[in-house]
Amino acid sequence: MEVYKHLCHTARAATLWLVWKFKHKHPLLSDFKKKELFGSERVFSSNMTTQGKEVPYLLTKEEAFTFLDNSLGICRSQVHAGGKSLDFLNDVIKGIKKSLPFTNINLLAGKFPDLTPEDFKYHILSGQGGTCIWINPFTKVILEQLGHITYHIPGMNHPIIDRPIDKDTHISTIVCDISYPGSRHLVDPGMRYPLYTAVPLDFERESPVYTFHKFKIKFFKTKNDILLLCIPLAPDPDTPVICDSNGERWQLMLEYRLSKQVAWSTFIGKWQEYVKRGSIFSKPFDSLLFSTFLTEQLHVNIVCLDGQTHATFYNLKDDTTERVTMKKTELMDFFLEHYPQYSVKKLEKVFKFSKLI
Image (cartoon, rainbow, N blue to C red; front, side, top):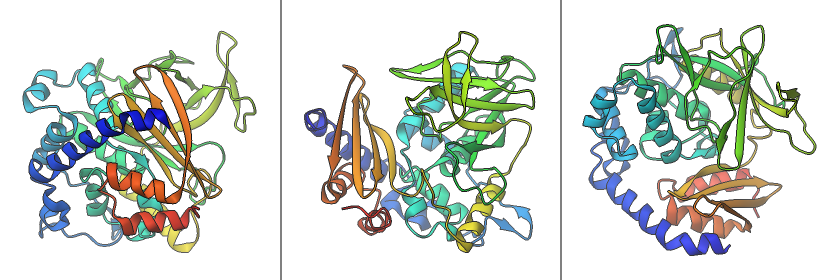
């Protein structure tokens, strides 16, 4: 636990600064009040679709610029200078990936079937993050406010998990016309894997290897316009194995359907309806997941399995990893100190659902 203890004071100072910044500088998040955030004129039904019509994700240009400035440190002048370049797009992706935790806290908190578009937006703007259904629709709207042409595509997670609604278990985004008219780039900050760049889709069969420190990702295409995200082969793979042109073996983790477009409210609405009828929570989403940057140089990944909390602290500066087991009380203290945007009541519900000891 030495890495964590050594950087705890720095992380605490950084977190307190961010909390102060949220409350005092961010006009949309004063006291984290939903009334101030959304205004009384924005009224939605409890469902993600209304009489068969798509529910738009309402994010104004001013809200987009405020988020870029206060959460990502990208000011208006940088936006205007960057325009719609690939470098600027990657800066936005990296900022969103580093500022928003990937977590299923709000999925496990017990109110997912009744969440409204305001709730999904509030969870993002209050720094709570989420899974793909929180982060990627928000990213898409941010990019649209910056002038990009985008659309959502569905995906499928591996290993195999319950699929009550066709094969769509993941939602991602395609950004068009970045490199040239007709070009397509995959943008997916709302995933567990460390992908901090837009992926051009103009390769024939396999992409270059995308590396983040020790972690590697490679993409493959199939003939029916399916895109496969793979990681280096594990000792005992429980998903399909693919060989690249160099004979290296890769393990399939995520599958995208490039030729199918999907609307965010329809996608989420299907999942909400299923949760009302039964259980959606099967591995890897049946217990707490939390992955984010504590500081610029310290990444933490928390996974709860069989009632135990396993935390991995990765120090990017000296490329060291430390794994620890945390008790429920220690995990609560961790969140209260570093992530006060999650209420004690919400965390207690998640801990109970995850059967933490």
